[in-house]
Length: 168
Image (cartoon, rainbow, N blue to C red):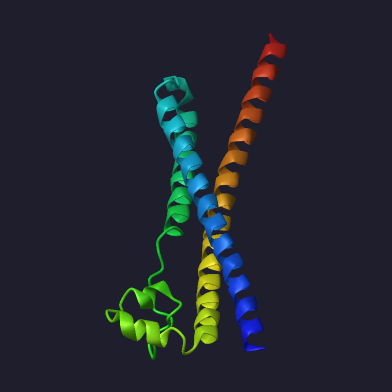
């Protein structure tokens, strides 16, 4: 029964780490896309004529929203180096294992509580995954708001141009 529990917890551990990898990839991609958006906005500002000063201001606001979303997404990529349990060493958690200096003691201790160590590890990494997903969601919502506002402004410009052409 103990072996079955360990295998189940190990499978869960694998799934949690797959999700962690996926979440970091999503945040990395979003950060790259937002960086490209900021670069595109900055490069287009010099092309906008002076009579469209409002458009420059608007694009700077959108660029600011992109930078804000990019920063939020980047924060999610910061490593979490907190200890799992200050009362004892968790032999499944890299943060605790990194502080060990005695290989023989580690080899001895690693078999004492493997199920509990792995279960604690799963809970800790699951919290990290949840945090990364929250940061991604907030960054994506800000990005989508900025993109939708661009679409809306383009719609208004096209509508005004059509109305101007019809009145001529």
